[in-house]
Length: 517
Image (cartoon, rainbow, N blue to C red):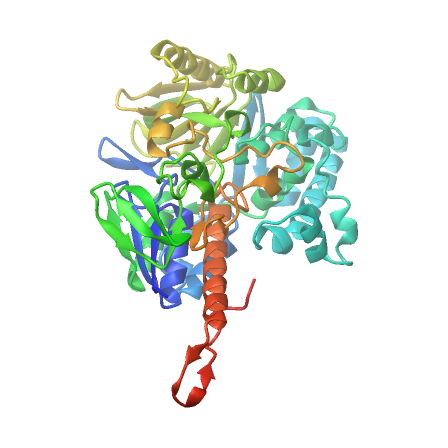
């Protein structure tokens, strides 16, 4: 079998796959259409400075520590980081609430903000979120995707009570009613649904586990989140991975029913024994990688896409509101915001997220007149069918500025600010329409429908935030690890099935690379 593996895409899932495969002795080539690593974990150069233009929250640090260890390195030697004291600052007009790394401090702040019953509700909510996360971490998040029956089998008798109370049939928004009477707190904790591009009114209450992930620790990476992608690239190169940038793939080659390599847009063919695709799986099913590979996955219909976004990246002058690293300014009518998005419209009064990338603490204001910011407003994922017009962009920008102004923040964006719309994200990540999180997590079965590591074509695997176990930087990393485990397990199984003739009539069984998943 050809020991060469081609990885399409240098997003987090692809970078992790490449590094782990190389550490196991595989010959790996990463082909990436862009100019550098990161994928959605991208940086945008504005006025000569790199500014994070993708994910900004780093959690589940242990996932990456384990990946670096498997590659014979340590995370701390490649990335400098420190824990955030304040997880996020939230605002509703003049009202303000911080959540802290210390859960006792968060509970006290909630009690002061909304009363003693709210503090008790938060304590109960936090315990429930932890219970659900602990129940699903190993049998679901760290295993290849499955069906409900197999999940129950994996959880076993000891986990049966947890299996029966994962709350897949109750919406997150409805579940929050049981913990918080204050609608502002339901808004705050419902927002975690948007971490995977979903609506809190339509996603299952199971997703409250995201709140536990963030409450378990947020880390600030020195130099920006894109440094993590650079560190993973360095890790791969150290173990022999060949990176080819500016090399878009036009076709995944299929011979005798299995993946056999890729064809670049230039016509160059790169043979391989296996291919890991870090592009959105929907792109394969939509035929972006050729007709032969199309049957490997299924294209995601528009109605199942996750949220898109309007993302402003640049420098700004700010006055008034005391920004921290992560800030959320909530709309007055959360339900109306998601109704608009579901109808394919930008919300008239959107919630706004601001990452102030030069602020490491509550009292740390950057020196100078301007600072680096990334601003996000949710948008419908229709960049391929209904691009946002200049008039709509102007209106959305005005609504965004009005929203933060209501909380006392004066925000003046520099003329050099870069705005990426769903249409821009469609260009960067084809066949998504600008949906940044793959399929939305709406309905009880959504997590089971997400594309898994294996595809319908042997030798072709998927990795990335649009695949199992889900969206987000640590989930994308886990997807890369799962793709590697499946690939090596399948290779070992194939080798065991081939009996090699030896002199004297003796056949030899090759060593198993990894335990079969």
